[in-house]
Amino acid sequence: MLIIAVDAMGGDLGPRAAFWGCKRLLGKYRQVSIKLFVEKRWVAEAAELFSDAAERIQIIGCGASVAANDKPTVVLKRRQNSSMAMALKSCRDGHSSGVLSVGSTGALMILSRRLLGVLPGIDRPALATQIPTRGKPLLLLDLGASLGATAAQLVQFAVLGVSWCRSMGTTCPEVGLLNVGHESGKGTEDIRAADTILQRLMPANYQGFYEGDDLYRGDLDVMVCDGFTGNVALKTSEGLTEWLTQMVKDELHGHWLLRLMSPALKAAFRRIHRRIAPSRHGGAMLLGIDGVVVKTHGKSDESTFEHSLGYLVKQAQNHDRESLIKQIMPMKAAIA
Image (cartoon, rainbow, N blue to C red; front, side, top):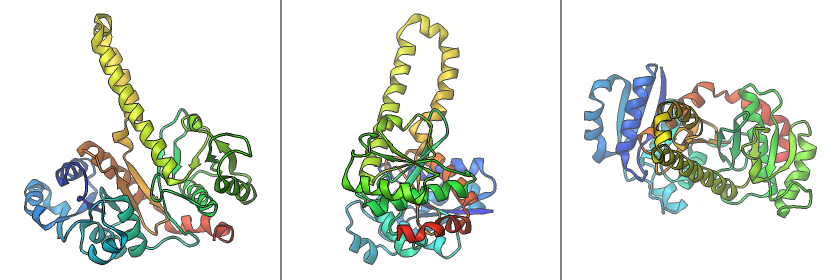
């Protein structure tokens, strides 16, 4: 039985969205059980909702939750009994195989580093997820664990991405550096310095600079950028996807001929939607943390929660700490 920990507090829609996401997940994965961490005032409601699955879910009442505007000192000193901290401690102590949180990204990174630590040679974790493209899935990082990144940290992100892909079975992952142009003189000083290091460090993997319109071509396995750029790129893509989805729906209902053809068109559209819907790609992992930690959108509804929980289950099942460290160690001297 795989046990996962869920921090249900901190989302825009409240913990009920997490409750229903967990309920849907338990209906699909019979070999998964959940430790659900909530503020004490939500325990009774959660217990009633899960009364038919009590043997596969444990509801733990916690102290005050992490607030979006909590400063790092507050998070570290006064939120050790929060749902986020308690979920991470369950992973640290071996009581769960991974953690999903809907709370503050900054707080999650701070507490994860304090409670779980980082992998050898890694200075700063990166928020990463695979996005669908025309070809193979693309691991994009950083997505906002930190806003800026030095040249050394960009190199670390590349090492993390390549190491993760290798641990997942990709023999020679191809990695690019997101920039404002392909030419060698383009970009900030940190991006140009990272490019120089990566050419020397991983010549077989590093493919050079790529621009924003290259993201969905499907040529790469890993795309590296700082957290500010990655977060904007991802959320712009999500907003565009939502707009295109709504535009197609409007068109299907706006013309009599399209309405007649809608059964066939809707079937095709559903297949496309399953590939690109943001709700199906809402989970992002904190790569570099010594454990499996997944962050989901603050605005996650129950569907997004369900898919993010499924993503956590997949990451926990495939997590190979020894293999990941083995991939990082040969590059440790260059990224320290």
